[in-house]
Length: 415
Image (cartoon, rainbow, N blue to C red):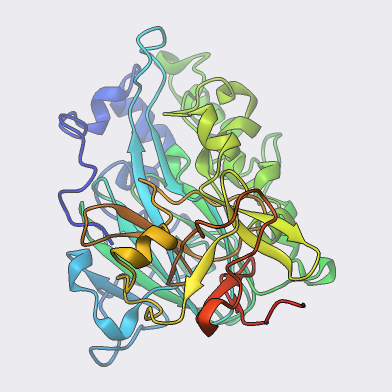
């Protein structure tokens, strides 16, 4: 979990969002309508139609201190205030990425979730942590004025507007595909996809392949690039031939990397992968380090005896320790133990393909940052010499390799 002061870049959010517009603000807001005007401020976008009422009740926790309301979730102003009874299974960060390339200073800021695609099990709790101001997590739902893009029976859930360092938790109980957006930054492309459960191809909803409307007037898809440009250019001469510079929700949700089957198989899809799918931004990835692509912190290796197991970036086998407490974010292995079983340390936990375990980090007593999988601290074994070695398996009856989901494989090695 992150404190409110974590990852707050200097001078990142001092400039009002309206200053980023190169065209007149008044014609823009007039052409896009009141709903979009509000989305450029710090509140939720209003419904665009008259057929559905928009819920305006405040977002609070559930009926008791440990509950997650099915419509309003559970919000805290500081991630450190999340109750122990609500330990999340996954975390999604909410970001604002400003241009950093001096050769391309006109590139618009990116408002995005990261990961922007995530696969969870039914009943999992996801923590949404705001690392920049004025974000919401809101379902595409008729009650919010949109095409329904959540499973049938799911209420029109939404978080409150989150400040830096605050968090919102939601329990995804119904299997299916959930598309959500940030109300204040929806018009600027801030959307994401959550796939719940192991969906087969026959289980995929129609909206997974469509964004309501079309790319041709008069039935333009709301908040598609064509829609935004049409609205800008159709009503105000000052915006003639104006091209929409920002991302759009349609571009995000139509990205191949967010195909539900791809999200299900990969477990998590980072924002950079979706951005790479969008032609006009493919070469403008924010803070995109090629080393992060080629060297995940934790990946999978197929072992002849144990099947797929977790390994580090060098494909050396990883282990868990039965004397650790799952989810406690602390280690029971120090001194001589740590010499024989070095902890897997990294500044960030990056999952490789097919790693479905929830990866996190915590600070050891020695000051190092250790990686966990499914709540288990990860270790190497000093006597493993090469990739594929599993000499530590079953050692003293307490050291075990782990499967892709972070579950220990407590099976003694064959003699």
